[in-house]
Length: 271
Image (cartoon, rainbow, N blue to C red):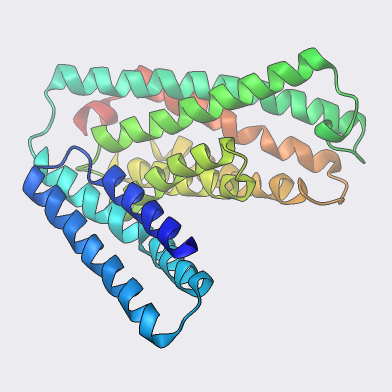
């Protein structure tokens, strides 16, 4: 039973990342995965492997294959849209991503500021462990959710706009970070650790490609690694103290990046 559920999960993932492809490519990929799943299930029966063991193997192969699946999809995407966007549409796409980055950075900064203030007021407890003001809690939750979603959508937009200028690895990291945002909002909390790191690699890659200046890209990468310090203590009893302030620089860098894109800097226009 568990193995059958695992195969349904694999089919859902394959259906997701092959959506929108030409029918021959899409169907070929799905048939390839179906044959692979059938082989796994058939091999498990005569060997006497337990249902749990087979399910674990299927899920493990799914997780380990995610980067290759995304890389394959991005490569097809780049080939499908090989012609660069026109100047007006490119500028519009950059400004939409810039606006989303600003909205996300501002909302995330508000949520981080509230979180930091409440934590500093009682460093031995987390906001969700104490009697936090309901209005503050609502604002923090709503702002944090909006901020994460806006930044994730901005990142996906930048992948689409600058797919010819960023490396495949960087684009995979950005898309994986966007997926991690969704998982985090679904209470898969450990996924959130990958969000700043994955996005920082992509932002740095765009900075090196000249989409915007390397200064904001470098600040984004540095703050992404710094924010891991307070994040790592959230699920523990370790007092956070002033380290909680380290969550503030990261969303602020998205304000800077968004402003750069909104201004349509010469580097971004040239890219």
